[in-house]
Image (cartoon, rainbow over all chains, first blue to last red; front, side, top):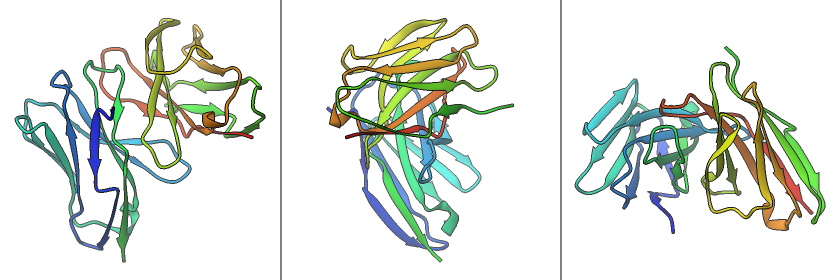
Length: 112
Length: 112
């Protein structure tokens, strides 16, 4: 059973657009929600993370929106660039530093 | 500060053989986690090691085993390889009690 459900599977946007990737979870014990970026041939790299006590977090062009009651969170990429083309994974964990449950990934393509 | 390094980068094995993958954790990190990432999927947790002991295990059979050494480096061993074991194997290091992982670039294992 997929603990974290991610959509869409793929996304194509024009440069400057704002792609949005959504994730949903069921386990209310989850208390840490990171997003990872993965380029081909590389391991995932931590992009930004949020805890359930805040509804939004911004770091540069990346923003996480978190809806605790709906058990959903999303990643927004402002002013997207071709260099943002990668696969993005949401994840969740119940204990700090312990097992992470990953979504199935979203392949983002930003067209120049 | 060095990142997480994994070796080898690529490996081809025959069904039924055994394989050992290696990981050097990031400087200052004392916890190592291993993940399996099938093509087009998100990483799946195999197990985590802390203080040279297994500290959590995902839904993987006993033929997946590991070690952590006093310098926090780690090995993943897989016995009786099956075709479905073909995947990218990711090592991630972290500091116990701190959120987030640093992933290595992975070992691409192909079982034929």
